[in-house]
Length: 123
Image 1 (spheres, rainbow, N blue to C red):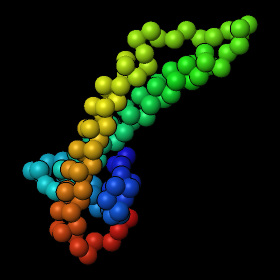
Image 2: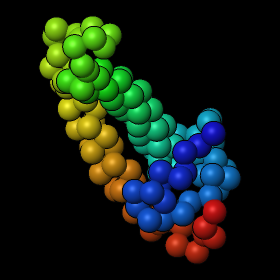
Image 3: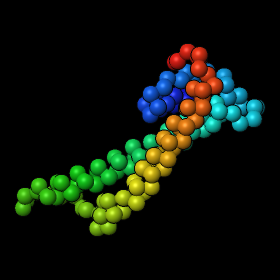
């Protein structure tokens, strides 16, 4: 499925998935539509990776919270000695930077799409 909701989310511009699919034929040379599809696919992938990483970091932080709140007789989880943020922070930073660049690219491509399809009905 084409993640056209990301165009609405980041560009405040509704684009019909059908119109985008129709404009980006697989056998055609690269077009604004095909570039928009590529940008949406990349951004959706990055956001999925971020969602997975945030869940992992959140789980590690909950372990730390349990350890800090534990009483003398409570069982506590083992804490990663490398550190939750130290171990995963660089990947989080890299994904956030990539996402920001992808959103900028998506906005530029969306402006081109809008200029070429001014009368196209939204989704």
